[in-house]
Image (tube, rainbow, N blue to C red; front, top):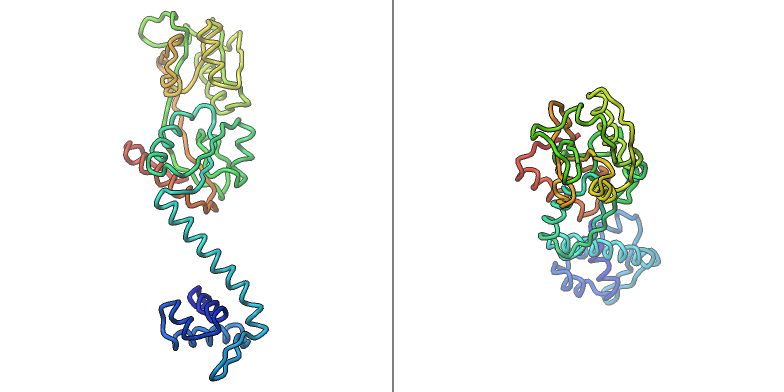
Length: 303
């Protein structure tokens, strides 16, 4: 059984004429007759009572008709939606991101919006705890996050989008010798950090920096959003440690960025999605992101 057979069945049922059904579906009358015989053979019932002059639906034919119409209507709707998406004229996309990955999603979204301006996009920043539940559900099409935050699940696929490092965010009047920051420079500082609950992996990486420099900070204030950290650092309440691209792209005049000296602070970010995602808009977005990764000459991984 295929949709052409069902369309011919519906036409015969509506017009009670094999010749008219053939005309409406641009096939021969013998083809319509063959399609109806094939359907009757498949269902094991007669769908029409036929004489030389008249055609009438059987009870079984009457029962099949609304279901056949529903199948064709659904197929037509699906065809229309996919066609609209491919031409950039409709659809909806939903993605989530963590507090430290906002820059790269913005760049991807810019490329996507330019190509598909009529696809609606919903975005939500998620904390560490919310992210785990979101990755396990179908509420969002994609998730931008640190690779180490990915759950161990066969249902999740991901691609590396970019790599970053950590830098020190300091007030504008903070003085250095131009050689970067080392452990001696940090020991007596007050720290303003993104909270562990908001970004547990980032928090862990920062704690590793402290351990590398062999000290534990005397004063740590935590905030749940990057904007509050900028305000606190700019006000001289302490210094912070954040991903380099994040702090550079904020470009606040009251703060500046200082590199670390002598240590590795690499971070790897990914775009994650569920294998079962069937949203056509999601496939277009994934293609956009992968094209951007290739264009940027970044190495791509599917985990």
